[in-house]
Every structure is written in C-alpha cells, then in structure tokens.
Image (tube, rainbow, N blue to C red; front, side, top):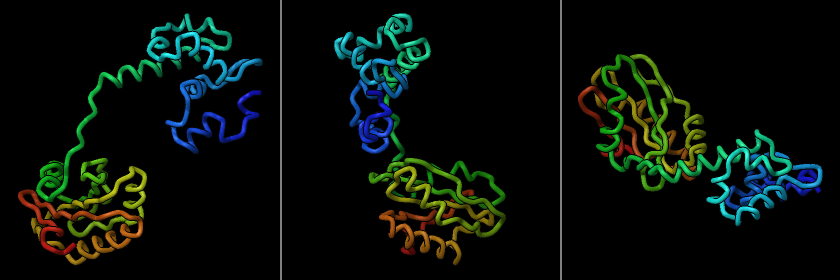
Amino acid sequence: MTIKTWSEADRPREKLLGQGRRTLTDAELMAILIGSGTRNESAVDLCRRILNDNSQDLNVLSRLSVAELCRYRGIGQAKAIAIVAALELGRRRKGQKEAVRPLLNNSKRVYDHIRHLFDDLTHEECWALFLNRQCRLISKQQIGSGGNDFTPVDIKRILRMAIECRATSITLVHNHPSGSIRASLPDIQVTHKLRDAATLLDLVVNDHLILTNREYSSLRDEGML
C-alpha cells in the first residue's frame, strides 16, 4: 500500500500536523524528507529498511555519504542530499548553546533592554514585547509609528501576534518625543482596552512604559494598570 492509500491520521505529514512531531517514528520523519518510495515500497518502508541496515541508529546513518545512500533503490541524489542535510543540521544544533532569553519582569529591565531603539527619535513609535510565563522575551515587534502625538495601535494585531508566538503576557513601550513621561489619556485608554481584550484570551498585559531620551514612566509602577 502506498502512503496515499493510508488513513490521513497515519500519513507522516498529516500525523505531524495533527498530532505533533514527537509522535512520529524516525522512519516517518525520514519519509517526509524523501517524499516518496518505489512502486513496491512506501517511503516509510524504505526508510525503515535504511534504518534497519544502520542499527536503527541516527548517528550511524549520519556517517553515510550521498553516494552510499544512493545505493538504496528508491533513493536518488536529491533524496540522499535531503537526508544528509537534515542530519547535518541536527549535528550542528547539538553544538550550539541555546540563547538565554532576556528576563523582563520589571519596568527597569524592560527600559534597559529596549531604550536604544528610541534614541534620538523625533517621531513616536510603539512596540510590543511578547513574553513567556517566566517573563522572558519571546519576540518584540513595532506595532505603530506616528508623529509627535499619540500613535494609534491595532489591538487585534497585537493579540494575533501574541497567539502566533505563544506568548502569555505583553508589555507595551512607546516614546514621547515631546519629552514628557506622563501617560496621556489615550495612552491609558488603549492600555486598558488591550488589557480587557487580552483577558478573554488568557493573556496578561504586564505594563506600558513611556520613554523619553533620558527617563521613563510605567503605568504598572504608578498604579494605573
């Protein structure tokens, strides 16, 4: 039976999408790489055979050259290159240390982390910082840019970004080119609007900072959030 005749839940690509990458066997993951098998052997069966010939050990498999992989019927140069490249990426990943995400659990840390983005700006910009449960930074995105006054922000866009990067909390930061660190009424209103909308999605708005070239204020620290 070819993979196309299998139930969708058993097909490697559909299984990865529906059940997650960890549910796939090594052979199924390899089958996604090569895409197809032969007339008499599905991609998964072909990959099982290759793995069996190499002690079911990815470390042994990773030592095979493109030419050695091409000796298997159904494995051409393009498929062999895909396997070699995937195993090489895995090897390189092992050699890299995972970057430590900045901890942004108070207004001073947020200010020190992002202040350089606002240096010498003559217009207003608004940024959103998306954080995980430990208040470590996942991503930061500019969400608005305007003139000398309040910059409108798209609440739906901010929430969509938070969901896409699997954030659990959000911190807003924007500058006042005028030099005033006092939050305006629109600043407070948009913060409360975002907070109320985020609550419906089990997201938290941690803070909203207003920056000038020399100092900052925090709605959280001032009891306005």
